[in-house]
Length: 154
Image (cartoon, rainbow, N blue to C red):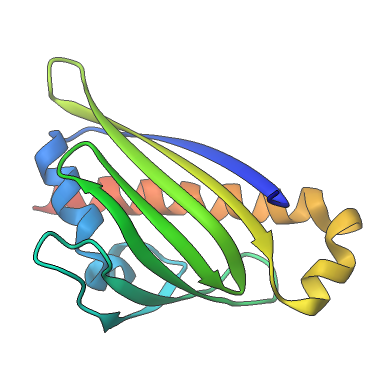
């Protein structure tokens, strides 16, 4: 059972293929997502991208960083991507994409089911839960805003 189930909705004013291309090019996330400090590929995976593993260093709104590895477990181009999470968080995540407004916009739904792995975070999880949720929402909102700006410049 996970400590947190976190759901976020983004609405990006761009076609699903453009959004998908930015979403899967995670090596470029630091250029448009302010809280992504670094992305490193640690395993290439198969030709479809399944089993690809990348390590992400996330800054946060609060005074801590997170280092997590995401391993792609399922990939349906322009529809969804599922990952297994390890490192400072443990669990699973899914991002689903769908066309909106006659294909002029894309809705993304992120669902994370994660548990805390850092000992200090586990110790304070009860009292800090609202702060951790607020922090996640803020980091995700900045990602949505950054992607909108990034795609508008293209």
